[in-house]
Amino acid sequence: MRWPSRRPSLPPEAVQSLGIEPGERVLAWSALVGGGYAAATPVGVRALTPFGRRVRRPWVEVDRVAWDDDSRTLAIWWVGSRRALGLELAGGSFLPEVVHERLRSSMLVTRDVALPGDRTAKLTLRRDADGVVTCQVDLPPGVRAGDPKVQAVVRAAERRLHEEAGV
Image 1 (tube, rainbow, N blue to C red):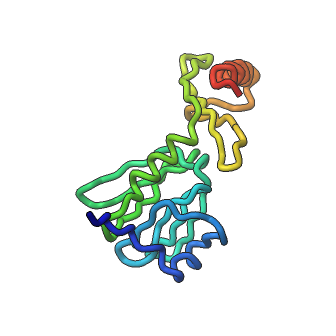
Image 2: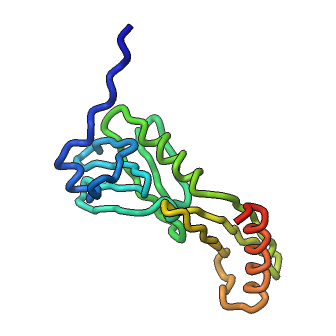
């Protein structure tokens, strides 16, 4: 019995254009329609878009992702941004699955937290590639992070999240 061959390695010109560091493993990659490449590494997302934009973002900065099978487009939203980076993949790749898995594995726990004034914040404990745990706080529009009441609620919720996650 013959095992299927592995996907070819990322071409050397793509390694250079994506800024892949020596020893940084590529978990999945794809060429992009119109030129460029996208890759997932243990450290984060790497892309060179068809327009020449170079993206190097750690997993803890990825807020959410979506895959559209019909258009073969992987959309990536960054924490604190409402605009997605759209990557139209040129060929068959496990990149969407790997990006989704890496995003999920960086999240330890997420909770909605009631704020004063019937508003809700989202708090997420995230672990980066080095194992450092941070708390991301997503406040709704119009809520001031500097408001002492908001700060007190967020600090208490953050302590509960750390206890829940055991960190």
